[in-house]
Length: 125
Picture 1: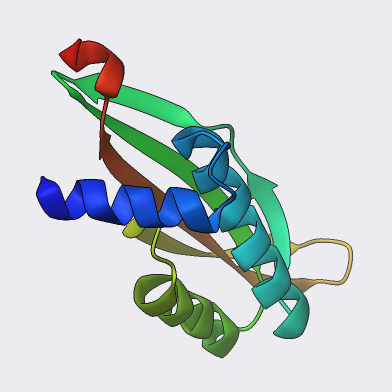
Picture 2 (picture 1 turned 180 degrees about the horizontal axis):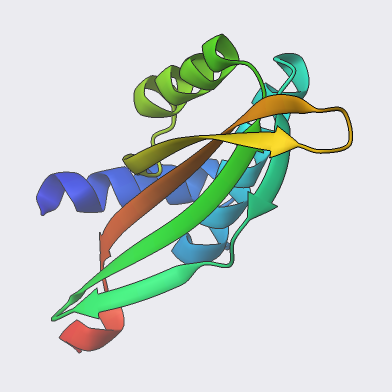
């Protein structure tokens, strides 16, 4: 718990201090994925709203995002999120091949679930 609190304080400071954890997580993930996608020929096709679940005094934030592009670029993004993104962890990944009927080609889509766990200060009061 102490490590999580220290990590939360450090990340809050890096994100400007005044922004809440929920807002920082969503914005940081969108910024990281958006810039990575632009540099590696990936197209962000879906970015879900923040889903929050609570268990006693902990909150779990989950975001779902989908991208389309080449397999190697998808793997590079996963590696980048798992090794460099400090605000959350990759919880699940799904690959799906979809037929594009406009050009009669198959396209690879990746759906990623990223989660962030933190202690809810309001429930401990």
